[in-house]
Each structure stands twice: as C-alpha cells, then as structure tokens.
Length: 73
Image 1: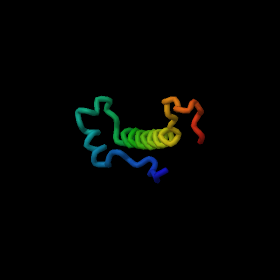
Image 2: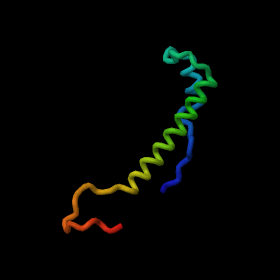
Image 3: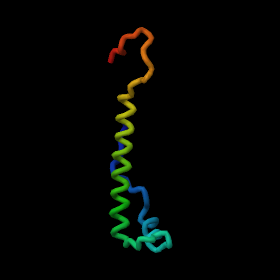
Image 4: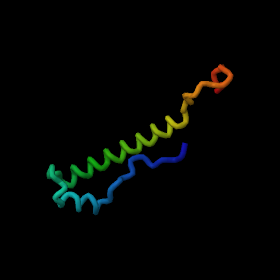
C-alpha cells in the first residue's frame, strides 16, 4: 500500500479564516470550531482512502470462471 499522510488538512488556515468571515458561514461557526471540523474531515477522508485502497486489493471478480472451478488465490 502506498504511504498516506493521515489527517492532512484539506484547507489552509487562510481559507478557514476567509470562510469564517464569509456569508457562506451560515452556522456562524468560530475559527476554533472550523479548525476542529476541518481536522475531522481530513481524518475521515484519509480513512476513506485507506478503505478504498483495501477494497481494491481484495477485489473479487463477479464473472464465473470458464472452467467452473473457483479461482486459486
């Protein structure tokens, strides 16, 4: 499996500050709350990437074998 940096922030500090003061921040979250949410999102995206990579490694073909025998693994 390729090396993965877990929890890499998806948004920069400047982007979080810009969002905190924008009209898009309809929940009126403060910068600390936004940092927490960004950290959680980074960790979840890393975990999803790991799951996808693991699922790709254990892919089971759905086509029946030509010989009628199950594939040897």
